[in-house]
Image 1 (spheres, rainbow, N blue to C red):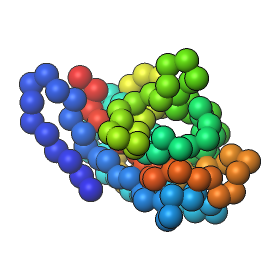
Image 2 (cartoon, one colour):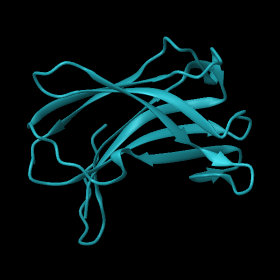
Image 3 (spheres, rainbow, N blue to C red):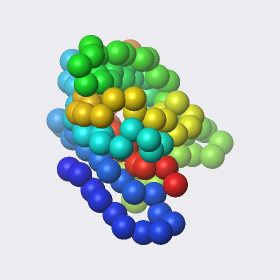
Length: 146
């Protein structure tokens, strides 16, 4: 799904895709993936991993293996420990009833894409639990930075 927005002061989402996890039980071999197109290599982009989980999720974090493939290149992987909350403050992100959505900014700051074209991404959970229960979906959001 490609989203385009018009607004003077808002960030513009150019891409967001969330892959539903079957039965809310994320098996290690199940991959959330997608493709998005970049045409403007002069702009900076905020890149977020998006995780949706229930209140029953057993941990304060999730380890994922994030892969990205640039046009004409091979897939490059990075292991990430994403904080979802803590015992003192509760869950991070936005919640409605018992469902929570957390967006984690990749790389800690906006980045540029070097090459125009179609980029691919993959996300796999690499926690000890297999399947990892109470994860509803995983995905990626790319926005032009203000």
